[in-house]
Length: 105
Image (cartoon, rainbow, N blue to C red; front, side, top):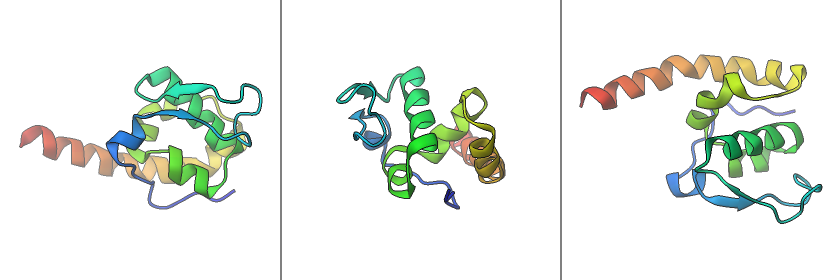
C-alpha cells in the first residue's frame, strides 16, 4: 500500500463532484453515483478508495483537506488506518495554520 506525502489536493470542482467509481472500486453497485458534496457520501467514497484503490485512485478521488476533516469518522481496517495515520496527523497542524491564515484575512 502506497501512501502519498504530502496529501493530495484536488481542484474544488473535482473534490465536490458527483462521481461513479470504476468497477474495480465499486463492483457491488456498478454505476452508483456518489455526490461528493454530501459529507456522508464523500466519507463512503474515501473508505472505498482507501481500502480498495491504488495510487491513481487516491490522486483522482481523495482531497487531503477533506480527508483530514473526515479522518476520525472513517471506518477503516486497522492496517490501512495505521499506514495513513502519520501523514494525516502530520498534516493537521499545516491545515489548521492555513485555516487560521484565511480566517484572519
